[in-house]
Length: 200
Image 1 (cartoon, rainbow, N blue to C red):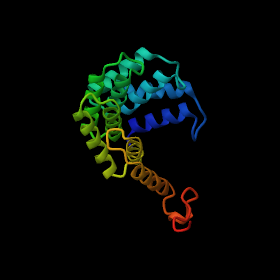
Image 2: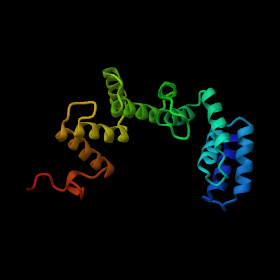
Image 3: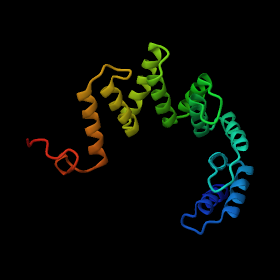
C-alpha cells in the first residue's frame, strides 16, 4: 500500500473512530494532506463530509468546489454523486440534462450505481419512449451481472407496470428469488418467508 492511500485510510479511521480512538483534528489534517497530495478518494471523502457535516463542520461551498473539481478530473464516483444531485436538485439547482450527462460519463467509466440511478430515472420519469427503452436496457445489463438493487427495482416495475407491461406474478417471483438470495445457501424450505412451497 502506498503512503498516500495509507494516509487517507488512517484519516478515515481517525475521523470515524473505528479500530482506533477518534481524533477529528488529526483525521481532518491527514485527510487535507492526502487531498493536497492528489488523492481523489480523499477529496471525495472530504467533500462528502463537508456536505453532510460528518465529523467536520459543514461547508457546502467548499464541498461543491471539491466535487466539481473531481467531475472535471473524470472521477466516476463524483460524477455519479453530482449527476444524482443535478438530476433531483439535491443541494443544487436542478439540471436534468447535466445530471444525465454526468451519469452517462460515470457509466462509461464502469460505475454501476450511476447506471442504476439513470435507469430508475429514465423509467420513472420518461420524456419519451426512447427513455424507457434506454432505462430498461441499463436495467437489463445490471440484472445480467446479478445486481440485487437492479433486480429489486425490476420487480417493482413488473408489479406496478412501470415502463413495462404489468406482470404481478413475475414481479413477485423476482422478489421471492431475491429473498432466497439473501438467505444464500438456503433452499426454499429453510427460508422463513417462503417456507415449503410443496405443502398446502
